Amino acid sequence: MNSYNPYSLNGKTILVTGASSGIGKETAIQCSKLGAHVVITARNEERLKDTFSQLEGEGHAMIIAELTSPDDLTKIVDSIEKLEGLVLCAGKGMTMPFPFSTREKFDSIFEVNFFAPVELLRLLVKKKKLEKESSVVFVSSVGGNYSFNVGNGVYGATKAALNSIMKFCAKELAPKRIRVNAVNPGMVNTQLILGGAISEEQLQLEREKYPLKRFGEPKDVALGIIYLLSDATSWVTGLPLVIDGGYTI
Image 1: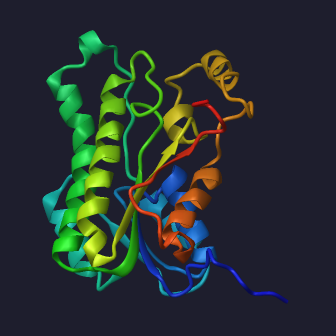
Image 2: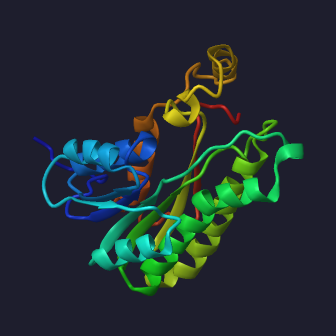
């Protein structure tokens, strides 16, 4: 039997934020199936325990943390010895017409979607917790980068900022042999869109805009993240990988 697998994560320690649901949860599970030691973090203990129970293999860890808390960020960094992979997936959505997009609204979403993951990455780099040849993946979005829908300005701005800082980090961390990339999903079947804020009729109209006639599943994005985490992409950095069922074409 041929055991060749360039996408194996065997022996790598990978931290996944936002691992209690959606893309983060699926990424953690898939990483464990490919041999990684997975460290998962989120603020909801019950849901994080559910993710932890589905991880395959051994050597995993779980950290309950609120990423907007400086103390909790320090707790995460101090509890980690070394990493070969980092997936910055925790995020928050918002649909808000521009006239109502106050500074407070922008601040609340930027705090979660931009400042928290960037500060976590900064601390991990400063404390030398990321090994050489390690890989960092930001979870961004086509919204704000390739797609500009009414009411999506606050959320989209945070994701555009992530794609920008990703490229700066890719350039600055390249001498340390740390690769930094991003995935940009289209609409994915997670609580972010299935939480009731968007009607089924609206969702169906949106699905019709996708050439493949469906939204993504968390696994569709998770496997793209794993591609960027693996040694198969050892010559890839600064890439905003679009995974969107053809939406942006």
